[in-house]
Every structure is written in C-alpha cells, then in structure tokens.
Length: 224
Image 1 (cartoon, one colour):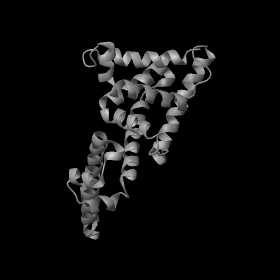
Image 2: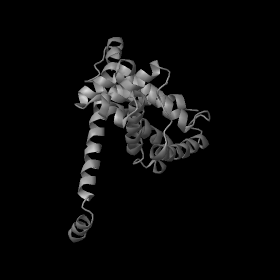
Image 3: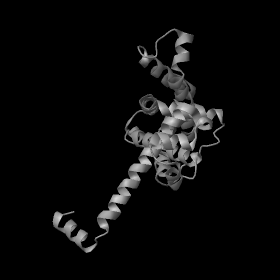
Image 4: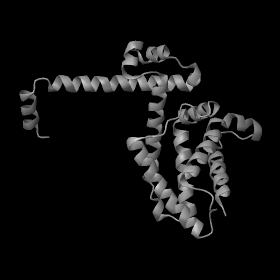
C-alpha cells in the first residue's frame, strides 16, 4: 500500500492504529502461550501439564490463558495443528512427481525424519500420545486438512506408479504410509539414547546411521 493511501486511511479511521495494536498484541500473547505450552508438554507430558504452569512460563495470568484457550486439550490440539502444518509445508515443496517411485518415497521418509530431528518436541509428543492411545489427537481441518489431502494425492500417485512397476506392494496407501512413518521415525529419533545402549553406536556421531536405518526399514516394508 502506498504511504499516502495508508496515511489517508489512518486519518479517516482514528481507531485503525489501536485495533491493529490490539491484534498484534493478542497475536504475540497467543504465541507466548503456545511456546510455553509446548515446553510444558515436552517436559511433563499431557497428564503432568497444568494451565497455571503454562501461564507462569508464558509470564501471563491463568485467566488470560483461559481467555484464549478453553483448556490444555485445546492447547494441545493447536500445537498439533502447528506441527502438522509445518510438516506438510516442508514436504509439499518436494517434487515427488518428477522422481522415480522409490526415490520419491525415500525423499518423503527422509523429509519426515529431518523434521522430527529438527524439532525434538514432535517425537516426544508422538510417544506421549501413543501412551494415551491417541486420545488427544484431533482430525485436521481447514488449511491443515487441505495440505494433508494435497500431500496424500501426490504420494498416492507415486505409490500407484511404483505398484504398476512391481516395486511396491499393493496393500499400502498414503494415509498408512504417513502413520507408519511417523511411528517408526518418532521411535528412532526419541529413543536414540536407548538404541545406543542396545547397538553400541553413538546417536550423535552416527546420526546418518539412524536416519538410513529408518528409511531402509520402511522402504523394505513397502516392497512387493
């Protein structure tokens, strides 16, 4: 918008700046609350997280937290949406249709793994929800759902090409691939310390080993 036009709008609507400031401050507060909730859920899990602890970490009152969110269930759902949107955003930049089927699925699994590695909270929250039988997971809606369906369509095209070439088994679909990749990758990423004791290899110095292990394990399960 041109400066003259913007100045004209501000002069004709004296409340515009105030409204914009309120919206900005609300957005900042919500961001603080979500960041605090993320840390509390990572540290204490769903059961151990309390709204007053989230408020204290966010440096706001508990009443203010409740003015934006009905409870920790809604906060957990909002965090799950944030994580999903970022995952789909990262995966949707990959041109799967331009790749050979096996190369495309490898890129998909590696993309999921790298997201889990970049944000350890994802693996911890996934494991926490496994312990609760997925009780706090909500089906995505709106833009998140559209991104998910877009990704599903792209992966389904890859799987069908691979199945037609006799590379992949017919039993797998994009939704099951997403679920199994999430479960396997979350286990590998969040349980690397335990794997170190089992296998005797450092998760830090042999980071590529753990990544390759996850990818190959899933690819082998897909093969016809």
